[in-house]
Image (cartoon, rainbow, N blue to C red):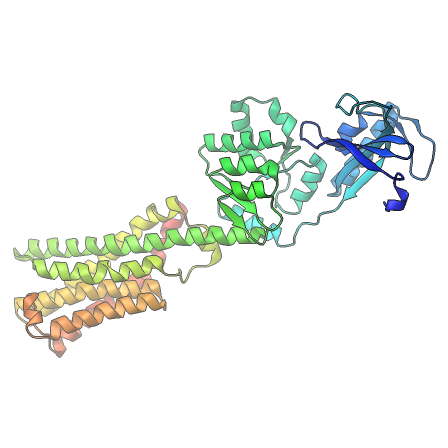
Amino acid sequence: VAVRRGAPRWRRTDALPFEPSRAYHATAGATARGTLLSVKGAPESVLERCGRRQPPGTAASTALDEGDIAELTAAAEELAGAGRRVLAVAERPMRAGEQLTDESVRNLVFRGFIALADPVRTSAAPATARLREAGVHTVMLTGDHPATAESIAATVIEATELKVCTGPDLDEMDDAELDELLPTVDVIARCSPHHKVRIVQAYQRLGRVVAMTGDGANDAPAIRLADIGIALGRRGTPAATAAADLVVGDDRLETIVSALMEGRAMWASVRAALAILIGGNLGEVTFSVLISAITGSTPLTARQIMLVNLLTDLAPALAIAVREPTGHTGERLLKEGPSRSLGTALNREMMLRGIITAAGAGVAWTGARLTGRKRRASTVALVALVGTQLAQTLATGGLDRHVLIAGLGSAAVLAGIIQTPGVSQFFDCTPLGPLAWGITLGSIAAATVIGSVMSPLARGAAAPES
């Protein structure tokens, strides 16, 4: 509406701010013809306070009966069903000296509807689908009309039939009924700050980790209460950003998906690092126990065991833990998490690494013992133990620069220790000849190839159980 077409010389004198419980915003303003009360808000709230209607372009108003209200309500719902946010507008002249209160917002003259379109980004639906694939239950909380909320949600959430309820519906439920409803609901409309807080508390009561996203001051209490409070920073209010744990600067849902992927990738790296540490030690113990049981003596001395741990448990495992995961698609990363990454999948990886490490060292020790002295066999076993673990680490880390430096650096240090007289004797070793190195490298290569073949099979077997 142009300024020239508004009330002449209008000046605001008083106002009732919008509140979810009130569902409208009322303003009193002085004009050349007296004080004018103007109201805008939810159609169902404004229409029930109207007694007359004045169609656009007419000067006279007519009485508003129940049939007219039903007709206007249907028109508002049709607009809302098309995804529009609908406001009803009404007004009336105020008497001299009349105070603006909730009780005075009565006998209004209905003037019309304002329909606002806020198109959903085309990338929102794929982002929501990826969240659901990652096991994240997404629920839309909004103060909009239920029809508007359902129409918008239908463009974002892939579901044959959306389950929609409203804030007033929640008011009629006790905690037990709410706990039963929330795991199945998709949209909650006409939602006030109180409702949002209660919803967050209910999900936490159900044992869920709750992330709350919003940008308004009315979202701030729920954002603060949630396990992960996320504010949309570009258009977010100071209250929302202050309450949040994470502020999304570009207001894009895809950014939240990327952040989730980073977190899930961390669990994949933790699993790989634990598999290297625990699986490698399990292989060392298995090899030592089996050879001791067969020969009656330990194949490795205390200094050699210390050297194995120094070269396999420090730099290589740390490089795996901090690397950017490779060989993982986005979908696979989104399926990672504490329960999946540290459950059956971790156990299988540890067992596989332990078996491959023990097998590589066992084959190398046997070949060296059949062709030479005990000390030479012990040295070959030491190199095979370290080499098999380093080879598996390099296979896991791919071409990551830190993993390559840690893995190849540890291998170079080991070769230098073994082949340097004096230093080699300090660790109860002996320099190796071509045959011994051939046995060692052959055992390492064979064990690594077998491990690379078995690893995808073990991962595939663990996936259904996860």
